[in-house]
Image (cartoon, rainbow, N blue to C red):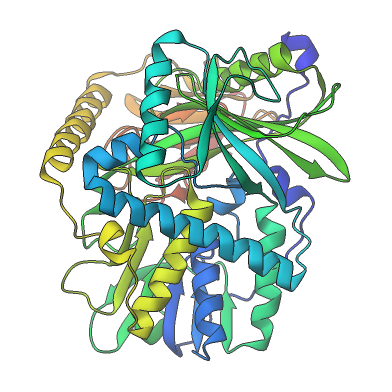
Length: 515
């Protein structure tokens, strides 16, 4: 199958291939605002938009390009069906809070649908039924429990024996009238609307410090200051250290392939119960229908060669569809909290004017929109029933303590494992387009040899807390198995919590000579 796949060499989300954003300036002077929003994904942009509609002066900044982070890598299902979730949620937080979670996400879906219709947004919004299915007899009981949770939470779902696409399913729980869309076209329209509001947007502007006070000061890496009454940290992984979020969440990666199929797609959005996880939906690209297949979840920096995950998805596509053209591949990173409920609200119980939104566990379209509405209400001093469900200061003794022990034991294991292994491979032994841990002058280093023969060498110790990084061959990055930081092969930070680049030691040619 490998010869027939014609896999794209580099990962690039399909969303960015048919959407062009005008460049935004870099912050090059001190500015004042009522609200500073850090992070220009769905949470940050929607929050800025909602506040702008209320007449507030907002400054929105992003460390990279607008919408090139997690939102730009999503599969963009707009649904309250969040996998095999609600039975466990009821066990963790009870029926009352679980109902508030459902209602907040349903309200978010309804708001998005209404906004798209009223604004006449061309974002390929399409209503679809969502299916949670299993192909294993032992998991039918899990589906029945999930259906019972739907009934307890008044979710309008039903159990079905057949789906439009079979996938060897033994049964599925269905929720009707969910949706899918093109997230960047949706948010591009929102950005266009913000031009008429008192909102300033800056990209390639890295916020590095927050100084608390009645007036909050956000300091950038170039020592410019944003002074505001409120700050919203919507940077996927919070860039502010307070709250110790790195110890309260873990990072998980998943992989996506986008293909044209020889046979017509029959409709529906799908996710299975068992591992390996598979999520399927269709979309429109350049006027033609394409199918997204997502899955192969694993903790960042852990597990098998990441290129194998793409191969597994390709095999699934070949088995259940007939691939006509392989258009794109990419991966995405999600943050998971101990109870699998996002953290949205005050950064800590003592920071009344600094807010955070993180930990959306793969369901950021509705959760992110619900978070933006909650953050807006908190800044405006309004009550919101979602607040106590997602409060970052909440504590559920049974699940929080258990998950804290599990996750931090895993961190300790990988910290020790990384320090105990010393490589024997040399830079000169690398093939083109190969990365590996190498012995470089008696020191452990990471090296990647480009297709042009140039080798890039970095220090593989994570700049966050010192764990040893692993090579990600599928995306050509260095990934941390402890807290999920990711770096380019030249050492630049791609994902936090790390905020400093790796030491870029050398790059050398075919003869191991410094260039």
